[in-house]
Length: 144
Image (cartoon, rainbow, N blue to C red; front, side):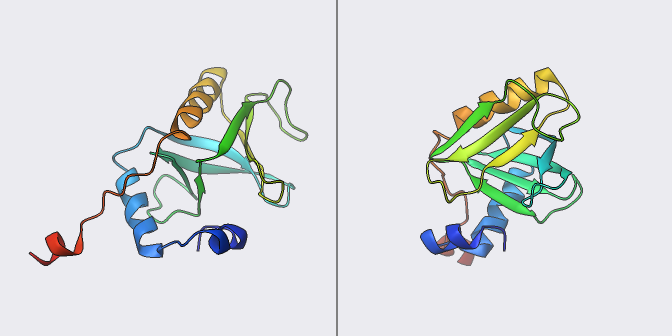
């Protein structure tokens, strides 16, 4: 659904749990807001609603969508502020999320302001060190 095929092959993902985590992220998040994300084919910038929850960065078509368009697992990632705007980026305030493996996609993001950019980069850098804690009801408590 949301994870790239390469990531799906390397980790087991339960779609239902991911959706449950994204729902919880809507009200229990570290940071949320609109960012521009460069499309996977690098041809355009798309406005997406981002929600940072523990070490997951969910993104949605808009603030009103309940089902995420995608999710980034931040564990093992690097978040770097770019000193100059990316090609075809109308304004500065750009940063990237990258991974050690060259085969993994680099995500290019752009904030609306200097302050927003600093807040996002700091929050993502801190979140990448957080271990994911599942806050899902267990089968035993759900059966009661």
